[in-house]
Length: 80
Image 1 (cartoon, helix red, strand yellow):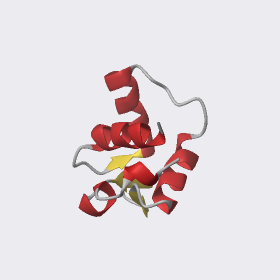
Image 2: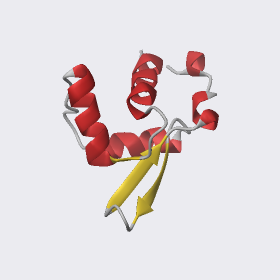
Image 3: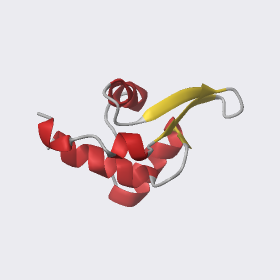
């Protein structure tokens, strides 16, 4: 199940670098879903596990997140 969620998150990103708010907006527009908790914390956990990448962007005024080939090469079958 968690692997399915990660695949949806990857789909939301496409090949774009997105601010946290932009990801939330895409989730809502694509799936009519609004994360019930602090989505930045969720993204941080995904980053720590290697499923997304992120960095602070002074230009964008907050965190910017992305998914690359290294993230997408993660073995989702081993996730509980």
